Image (cartoon, rainbow, N blue to C red; front, side, top):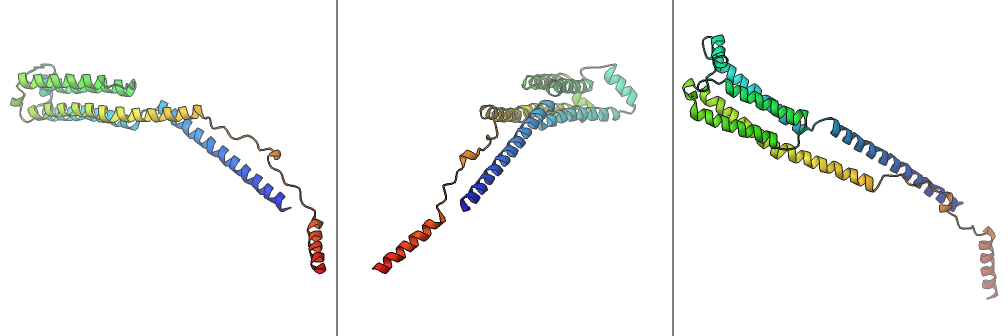
Length: 229
């Protein structure tokens, strides 16, 4: 009876392990599928941070340009002079327009089309640097007060921060996440998480029980031998 009880307990423990393995496999597969679906439907957090910084770039340059316009006694006249009577040597409107174009290109490339290459930000940064260097050398911005220094320097620095952030943060982290996802997917394909097959009763057996009288006969035989001696 003890052997049968032990086999029953062992069989119950195997069944419990089977159930735990099935639950763990189902949870792992569910988490992997949710990870894959979320990776396909949304952009990464580091890419969203980059897009947010690009938006900050255009808003900050716009704010500085509006402050420069308000420095004049008449805002409307200053706006007409900057835009309608545009002069490359004295106007700040082209720096604002360059920041806006940079915003459109980067958002379209890395938020809408989700580009995974650095050529777009390299193009915007190179164009910004070339234009600002030429404008600082040829124009008369330094005669316009402090904004003649602030706007070109700020736009130059922001363009290079965008290039650095994409090349050293966004692309490496997304490549690492993609490699991790492919590794998990390959492991799942090579060794699928299948629950073990049902346990048959033939896997466990109990040795035949010895007759209860055999022990008593052996004891009586030993007692008889002791009396004869």
